Image (cartoon, rainbow, N blue to C red; front, side):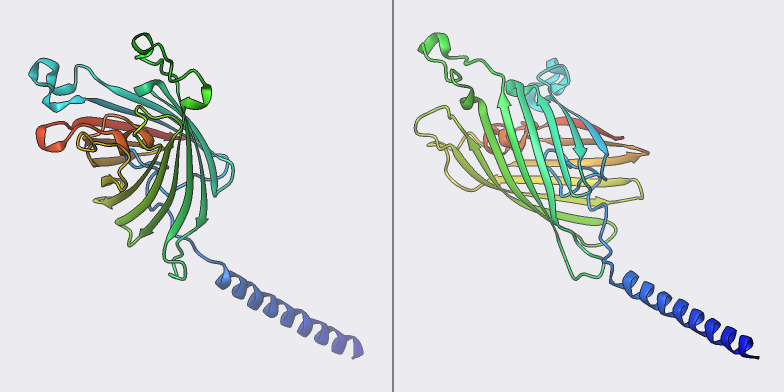
Amino acid sequence: MKNIIYATILCSFLISGLKAQDFLDSLMTASEPKYVSASFKGTRLIGLPTIETQGKGTVEFRVSHRFGDFNSGGYNFWGLDGGASIWLGLDYALTDRFTIGVGRNSIQKLYDSNFKYILLQQRTDNQMPISLTLYLGVNYTGMRDPEKLATGRDMYAYAVNRFSYIHSVLLARKFNERFSLQVQPMHIHYNIVELNSDKNTIFAIGGLARYKVSKRAAITAEYTSTINDYKADLSPFADVLSLGFELETGGHVFQTYVSNASALNPAQFVPYTTTFWDNGGSRLGFSISRVF
């Protein structure tokens, strides 16, 4: 009889313990934040970085290509015959929040590196309504000074003169399953500038938008504008507007777009774009990214 009583008491404790554990597990599951994912499909949209990083240990390879100006005419097949710029880039995720990347741009023979860290992530319960990512880009030009023979002076005599930098805070929100928006203030710095009257530091603002029209397709847009007067005459320089169409196919994302910028690095095209939409100074471009 005693054995039956002891067994009954033991079973009661076990059942109570299991129920208590289930209750604790439910509390822990409820307290774990759920984050919004895939605000943008990749670490870049058209030319600007997005808030996104890939999962730990993931590699993203990207090829971007821009043709010549539409206003170059039929003889140049409206820019498709020449004047192209190419960028190759590789990003690696050290953690789920931190990535490093390297790239090469044909314009100014520019080598670039970037570092991106997700500081805040948007949550599904809206307790954190935005995502915030910190971005640092370091660029090195392999150009030779074209004025060296004429001036007798080499502006790249010191390696430090070849560097430029871009610092940016990326703020984004995914409003629903279709629409995401990002804004980013930018600080761009060149160690050496063309004229003594030019300023080494440039401030700018950028905006990115993505709207999904189907499960695998989206319309994309970017806009950038400078804020301060960094050259004596700013009239040759244009704000940059890019409009694109994005298609996801398995592990690839293909995007075609039209932009008035020829360069593919933000430190180049944000302050120094000299072609305008209103006179046909835009061009066709495309990019392909692959995640491994």
